[in-house]
Amino acid sequence: MNNRETHAAWKYHDGTKHSYSSIREHPHLLDWANRPQPFKIYPKVEPLPLPRDVPQTGVTALSAISEPAPSSCADSVPGLPDLARLLYFSAGITKQRAYPGGEIYFRAAACTGALYEIELYVVTGDLPGLDAGVYHFNPADVSLRLLRKGDFRRNLAQATAMEPAVAQAPATIICTGTYWRNSWKYQARTYRHFGWDNGTLLANMLAVSAASGLSAEIVLGFVDTEVNRLLDLDTRREVSLCLVPIGRTSESSLPAPKEAPALGLETIPLSQHEVGYPAMLEMHDASSLASAEEVAQWRGKPPVVPPNAPPDEEVRLQPLPEEEEPKDTIEQVILRRGSTRTFDKTASITLAQLSSILDCATRGLPADFLQPPGEQLNDLYLIVHSVQGLRPGAYFFRRNQNALELLKEGEFRAEAHHLGLEQDLPADACVDIFFLADLKRILEQYGNRGYRAVQLEAGAIGGRIYLAAYAQHLGATGLTFFDDDVISFFSPHARDKSAIFLLAIGKPLKRKP
Image (tube, rainbow, N blue to C red; front, side):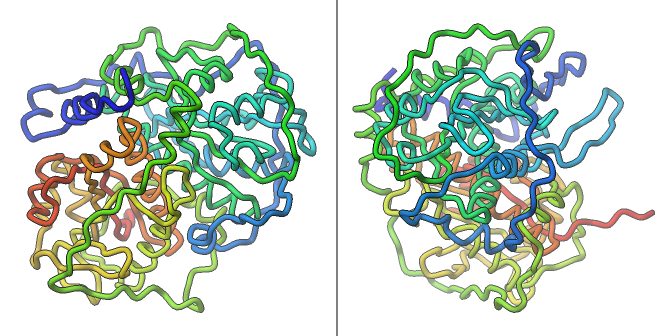
């Protein structure tokens, strides 16, 4: 199916909506005995351990989140310690907890259901401390495994239609999604989760890269079959989602492309058996790009610019002054971060705290699908429950004016409880942030691949919100929702938009000893 045949994205999106009736008419019981393994393991490939005593950057979290990655013409080549820092603070294990069926290994970035379906690979030339090759990162033992020996960077560059950030990068990290590891719990809705979970991981990766003085960019335009072949993926189970070129080199030419024959490397099965959800595979195939020419054409699409009507009433945001910003480093915040399980519904946050979160998280992502830089596909709508200096109600975030437009005033905890799949978290939070997008406009310009882009961007902005909240010792958690009811609640302002993501922010409820 062609990327321009956008009925495929609409079919998937509409077919995976949650409603009050759908979750009751189609209950899904988890098969705990068949829970997938949390890691991709190559049992016959020797590990290359990564250094674990890498020094921290010393850069504060809010600075790392909000400041753009270096983009100077000077060479910026990561060494093995830099790669170790990036990989660990993006996907490494930061804590673990026992449960009746075994242990849960919590990672550096938030992930739906703590299932961690995003895998990381590295394609690199010769680096200080690392030979050129194609590697897989295993968080279980913090190591790389060499899949292909040699410099395959031109293969990758050609697959991106010679995207300069990829062609000039000493190393590129590739993110993939493993269907079954997430669909075991979330079924066909997993393809949405690919964007959310890849995005939260990218928020960490971009922040740590900026703190390390290395340029980084999200590249979504590539020939899918070429990248999948290079990584030797079984595309019925795992697919490439995006590329992140790291650093910059002034090399005038890349080595010639290399043959990338099938490897047939053994991996340990995730479960005794897997359940397939064809809707996800159909959505991915329909959003794939087949040639470098198609990639170049796709990347050249004009930006999506939503209409900008004047507000009825707005509140200007007031971020924390620099001297009052928290000083915790980005690494300290990532290690502390988790998904809040219970909010203190009697607590409140300040307008300055909320302002800093929104300001840091929405300054623009470095991504090939956002041109010019600073554009954004998702709109942010808020239900404010308890923010000092802000009346309770529903708001629209006017990003270019750095202001909140009041849509309707009132106490909406009961409505938030319903919209968030009747969970207590969105009702008990201080504020709920809903990501809504004009899918019609996005799909018209970017085709089905625009669906990947809007979900990925929501996850990345959501990941920055996580980090900015935890930097201020607040809590945050991502949630699912009743799609159409969200649109109804924020209408008429949100008419004709689609619900993409939801994040709740508040103060964690301290457990009694």
